[in-house]
Length: 268
Length: 276
Image (cartoon, rainbow over all chains, first blue to last red; front, side):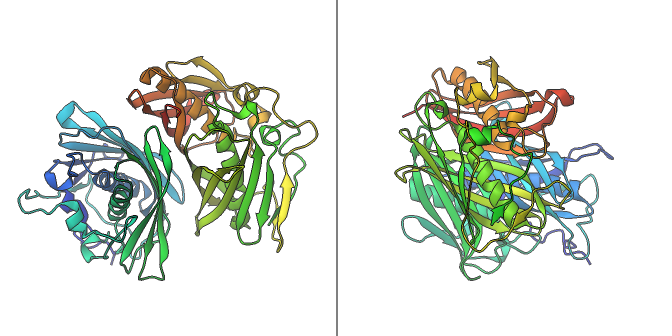
């Protein structure tokens, strides 16, 4: 039986964001396209009112990852590298993320993703690229009905906790934050969701620099399986567009294994 | 580790030779490299040219990845460069180490510093592992530090980097640049070298963003994704400004191989800011 047999397994994070995913390419298209939609509710906004970069990174990872996965069939994908530039901090919402495959190979898929603000005439919110490794899952790839449609369901704005509380992020001194590896943060592979890692990196960088995350490069190096997971920030320097930081994410419960290395620029 | 010299690459007149790259491969899977930073390699602000640094990073990262990939070979998948725009460098020192070596990929990080060991920035690169083919350079393991230089007699830039490489800016406000795929900028596969593609993207974005920002800005962040080799040329840029303020801006750049039906070979997001 495929490890993806339970369609709800590993989807808690996308449900938390209220991210509905749908395949938009025509049946039989050579390369799939996927869109994701979400209302922008207060739980994904930072205190300053902007949509958290961690939320945008999660959306990008989820939409582009699914698009890359469909292109990789009968294999499936894990994210290896996510690069995202936040072009605007003034998102009204709803947001629409559109992903398209840029390149497919035997071992990797490269997917472009743009996040647009449908509340502001489709203004660009973020632009990025996800690279995914193609793997052969035990029992085969997900057997989704096509065209794919994964409904997130509605998010209750009154009861949904803000992202830092949902992730249970805790500061670990002036330049580090940590989370436990709760089951609801795992992806369909059973490892820590790339979006959760991205959100942790975003919050660590903002915690250490006092700024707002704008540009992020994430290299997913090894899976997070045990936890707690800690992100540590080294401030490299400042420049016209903000503070440049280098972030390492390690699985403290797995011999402090390096999971992710990131470069982040935070606006003042 | 030791990269065996090849008869054909790089040729005597090549950008890697003019960079006068001195490299040390260490047995612990690290590399150190140095280039002199003369006036020809400076941006208008006096900071090291992003194209020179990208080429340095590409050479360091590629050499390291090729060494750890043995017996397989590698193809560059992406390169990111994060700079502080620091001036007064007369030399750049690069230190590379492997972040991950997996079944299908190698990820490398390279830190950059000036002659006083002040940070200039850092870079990352990802490589796809490929089955070895005839013609791939042979790399032998060694248990001692191996040193080499790309410089030969007469190496060194006589003109600014962009002029030396033949990079032409045809429409500055649109960020339109053109780079011929000549031997001087080709890699061992016969395509335009990854660092040179990064330079083209950087220069294209800088011009478009300087126009959009209303002031001269210089590249501080490069996120480059390599999709295909640019073998025929010329390489041409298409730039879309994503956002611009008086202090900084970001552009999306496509580099196409005009001689290969305008095939998109490289994508980049470039952030440029006003020099300090």
